Image (tube, rainbow, N blue to C red):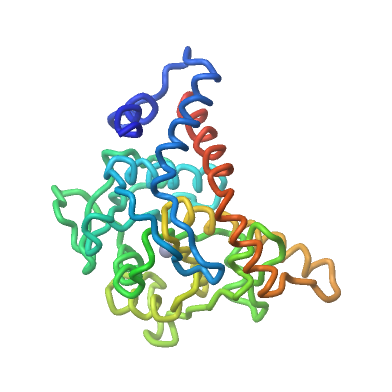
Length: 295
Ligand SMILES: [Zn+2]
């Protein structure tokens, strides 16, 4: 309810900007309040990326939609998403439906742009709005993974080299510990021959979901990646740090010699801590997005 009452202040209908005269202190205070409200969406996950004990506290629809908007804008702000890519969340009250934006650049997404879909990728109330061609990434993963409550699809530039080279993406530092168990690589050509590379129907989405299996991230050859999680903030965190890890790993490989990666045991321990302190970075990200909206 806090998120609902404050949402128009910084997002507004159609992305109304924050009044410039509102001081930085108030922005920080809002970030704190939003952080408190969104704690309800925080659900712990086991170190292997699967959901742990899911928080059964009710999550209001407005708070969930705010998280999708913030996650979209955060990932655009940091260059993980550009004009493409999308963030979605499963409806906790109706697990056979999920929410994602109409076809729109992530940096422009507002609460008014979020639409409801069923698990066949059909919009519940399209009202003539254009929908993402690749919505089947989301619908088929929600079908295959009951533990997944949020999905992020990116074309993040740091990751692409690892989708086309024989070097596997591996965890090089603690924030990307969720990668310590490996990230499978999906090649659309294997099952579907020469395509336009897009996940444009349920069959292709199902193939991708099968390759993801029970992992937190799947790489897509010559395309990008998908990160999933038990809450929007977890999926966004994983999408962001998958890109950061890929960039760092590329640098480490370029230095030459044998790279000393995190072990699976280190990854499991570090991931558990990361999920406990995730709100610290989430609240910082939200504050950065609000500052951007104020310009
Ligand atoms: Zn894509």
